[in-house]
Length: 396
Image (tube, rainbow, N blue to C red):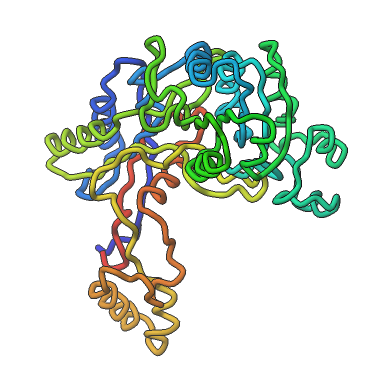
């Protein structure tokens, strides 16, 4: 019988993962158990994805605010620290800021505006227009910002992040001056020692600062890039990708994930004879039209994946073929013509009109976003995602 279902995505329940657990073994056992209980088969080119959170938990990749403070103090000494371009997230940045403040004497906190880099807004673009403020040229003090825009709470969290972040710094008796600018060079009017907290634009920001007279330049990726007093760490990303664990600690982005995905693939192959693709995923990349957040607060969507997930989709647009190449056909004749076209399509469709409108993104970014939306960020309890039929097309 002809297949009538394409891609199927399942969120798989798993035990609570703790430090020292064999994450690869737990993932494999969870997939096999789900297959048995739910009655689905495991096939070649199925995809198993695992959220970065449980990988980091199994590694015990945690650090305290004291660890962060010690690293910040070691890098900056008693300098006034310009902490620039933080994202507006209690989960992602609040505990990091506590650690930074505990290691500092004075902080100049510089927000980008109207939003952070992942889309959380301090103020609407319409309000900028109304007040005649140009975010690309205008530098605002805290008093000037409040004079223009007053107090604005985040759409979903109900938090005024300016007050909140300032209060976190001042909890430690540290002086905190707040300014607003989208130009990294602005901070150099206040201090030559800078900790840049942006994620995806961090390399550009560091380059600009160093070229314009900064004396000490570090990013969040440089903080806890090595262990501090036995702490967790991430040699590639430091504090980037970390999440709040407790009021005094963070869970870092997992490190050395390639052996994990390779082991899961090998064990499933050994037990089922099937070659599945495996990846660890973090934040997806998709925009919320109401809150306007892009998600993507991790430094990468996937820190590790098996080779079959490398590259981009090579797909054609069915409706384009139906409306253009085969506009004179209907029914079975149209179906046969499209199937033959797909079977014989070029492996590289870059620039081809037939691929116009397909999603031009990396497979890992697409699959990571699909996985992140499926697992959610709350209490679903499904840190493992099992995807079937993703690589199928109309001819399968």
